[in-house]
Every structure is written in C-alpha cells, then in structure tokens.
Amino acid sequence: MPAYRAVVFDFFGTLTRSVRRGPQHAAIARFLGCDPDVVVGVLDRSFRARARGLFGSAEDTLGWVIEQAGGHPRPGQLAAAMPARINAMRADTRLRADAVSALTALRRRGLATALISDCTHELPAFLPTLPVAGLLNTQVFSVELGICKPDPRIYLAACARLGIAPRECLYVGDGGSHELTGAEAVGMTAVRLAAPDLADHLVFDRDDGFTGATVSSLTDVVHLIDRQPALAGSSAAA
Image 1: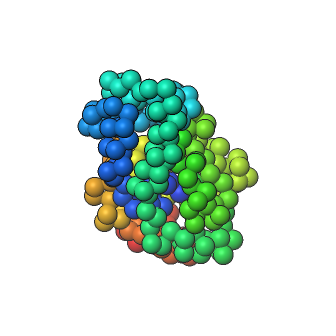
Image 2: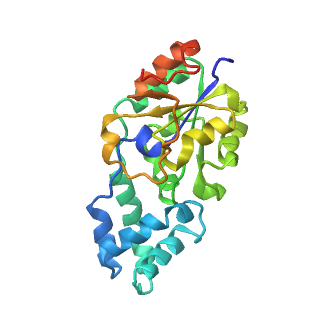
C-alpha cells in the first residue's frame, strides 16, 4: 500500500459537529409567507437536486423552494432573504473542536488536505470565513460541479486538483450520500467518522453498507496517518 499523500474530508458532520436546522430558517420561511414545516419538507426532499444546482442561482433556488411550499414572494423579497439564508446555514455550522488542529497536524506531516461536500450555494459563500478554509489545498462543491457523491467524478475532481492518485488519498466522512463506498470505488481508502454527536445529525442517504475502519475524532485521523500500515483492512475503531 502506498503512503498517503492527501486526506480528503467531507464537511457537514465531519469537519463540523452534527447539523440541525436552527430557528433562523423558520423566520426566513415566515418572512417569505410560508409555513416553516412545509418549507422544511421541501428542503429535505429536494436536497440532492439543490446540491447539484438544478434550480439555478442561490436566489433562484430559494424561489423554487418557496414556490413549492406555496409561497409567492413579492419583488425583492428573495434577494432580501438571501443574506439571512447564508447566515442561517452559517449558524448551523459548528466546527469540531479539533478540526483546525487536525488539519494543521496533517499539513505539518507534508500531506495535502481537501474538501468534498455535497452542498447548496450557501457553503461556498461562507466557508471562506471559517478558520479551516486556509488549511485546505482544494475545495470541491457539488453545487458547482453539478454532481453529488458517490459519483466517481466528484472524487476524481479533487484528485486532479491535488495532482494525486486516488490510491494515495485517505477519505474521511460521517457516511452520508454513500460517500464512503463511493470513495472506495475510485480507489481511495475510506474511514468513517463515528463521533458521538452524530446520533442526531441531519443526513441524507446514509452509507449503511460501509464496513471499513472507523474513528471517533479527527485527531484519530492523524493517529491513523502516523501508523499507516495498520490501516489497511482495519474495521476497528481507533
């Protein structure tokens, strides 16, 4: 097995703690004339389509969601709501306590770091404000590529940007979007982050068929890198 040259991370639930929608989302729905519960239903069932950018810009996508929820925004309302939408997503996002230290430790060991996220337009808008942004060599967003995990092309896009072969990459994720089996299918080694807080994480298409290695923290990923030969074929938690 070759030595790893890069570690590729999922974002929500991996570099962040578990994600649940906060109260700001309900306020946005009411501002746009909709029942918040109906809006949540539309958001849930349309996530993968929105994460592929199928409804256009961030404002167009919000307009589509509100129309599906029975709303009829007045001119200018959607544009006025967009900063609040980004802020609401930002408020839902809490980096793990060891996210910065783990990324820093990996880079000090000479490894590249990358992000692959199934996400809507809001994450690329607020990620640059987070302290992990400068610790990632590249960031791949589904909404910009028009494809979601486990499509092989999203993993290969990260590899191409890094100039590193898939077999030289360790992929770390909580297991949404069948991301772990998808990473393995292109030749990466995948590891599931099974942190205790993820019990109530908002997740779509959980990768229940994955039987590979697990870790309970991002710091454990650094420990795995430090003892790479022990990782191959491991299914025990670190």
